[in-house]
Image (cartoon, rainbow, N blue to C red; front, top):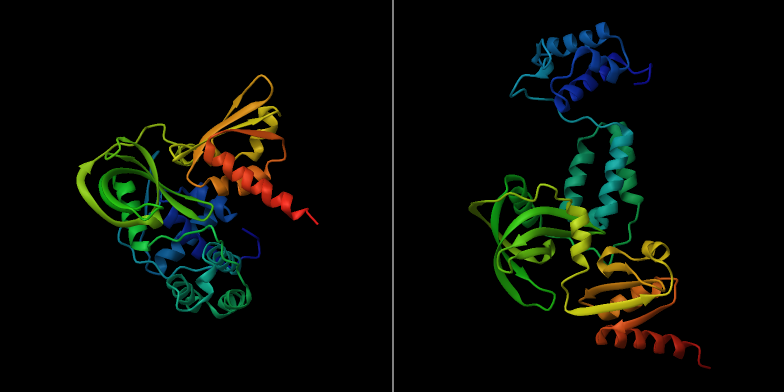
Length: 318
């Protein structure tokens, strides 16, 4: 910490360290505060004088920790932390500038609870910063998300009601492995017992969640983000087969995981995958790849690419 920090600020920082890192030793506390061990012990003493019960123990697993059940004072933000919080909220929830929005209402309460000098800047930022909504984002219901995250944490199977992209609805029991946020969308990575396969579901399309008594164990080597990326490019209705003349190393940076998997070939590489939306695949993904390619399958993707090509060709006709 900077040398000009007041003793009160260091005492509050000591409280925060002990809250988030129980078992912190005097030496570790001194390092985090930027003071001597003697001074660190003095700040612990200040907390005790203020009625905050700080316990200490010796030995290899010893250190300082707050007494179980200790009631802490309200959370204190620095100006940088407060502004960072407002920026993060607006980045993820542009509509949080509206007082009637649940997230906006919560943010307003946080700002009101801040000290005047800190809250003033946060309020100005929230009032005058504008955020353009992400047309690809889809916010799920907080209650649904909370139920799924709880099931992930407790490793309990859940029964979900789901609405597919075409509007069809169904129910299934799933083992929720992880909830992953990707590019503004929330996904549930799970093992679906209805299909007896790994599936990824949009959380905003989950209509209901109920927990069962069945426990489960996720794969030990599970990498939720990597598996989600891989699964987003497979299992869709329309197959895709695209051939590039460029080597895989050059093409790979332009191919997001949901487009499929790249395989080396004698003259370049081949992209194999599937999609639920050939038009989007053609005009948003393939059109952005700066290498020559040939669409050798499937029929729906070939038709979508032909439509994009015809539209661009027509734009040059005088």
